Image (cartoon, rainbow, N blue to C red; front, side, top):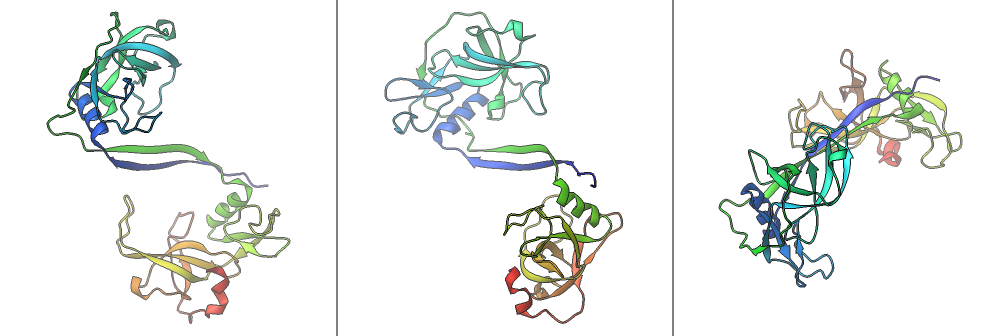
Length: 314
């Protein structure tokens, strides 16, 4: 059995959201070294603030300033910080109930070791030197000996140049293992061949293979080489340029039924103006030196395939 492949992969995109009046005031306040909560109908002060009471669903708008000191209610030690976490050295994740608040805020505590952290210890905010209106404006919490105060004061929530939206980068790092069937498929592509697997029950050939028939649910093992030519079944015209993709728009991305396959795979169509791509167009792969997959597909010059030949693969 060939070795099963694996590779590190990253999925990353910026998550953009607008802010309502409560979240806008909270984040703008952090930029101004002010911590705001919101008061509920029964008098509780929630920090971080929310727009609706989690118990009654009542809309909340009464903003309240709380202290920058507080008490650790629970904690967990992080001995090996990861990329983009608040501190580069070991720290404690802590829930801190700020003085004047009735709920706890999740952040990090800068401490020399787990022996220096206790539930009930007093802490204060260490502000970031440069603040932009984000939760990271709180650089961390640090130990601080002080008395507990319950003071809070109403706040208008009005600041100059309020923060109205945030962009949060979302990123997932993981190791992808394609399994036996797809490893064989990828290894064949590195030899400029395309292989699928045939279902022993319905006899359909699936490309790329998954190791089991999606229709019958039975394991597949018989390898079948397909293509290299195929037929465009459906397609779309791409008009928005993707980041880090050196392809000029507009271009065409299509589903291509390779000869001998019973499932269409996708690929880019080149070598022809985008507005001349059509269903039934016969195409073949174009490989670049050292590539592990076709760069794109181009017209073969053959007559278009009859619709009946690929209608089941739409």
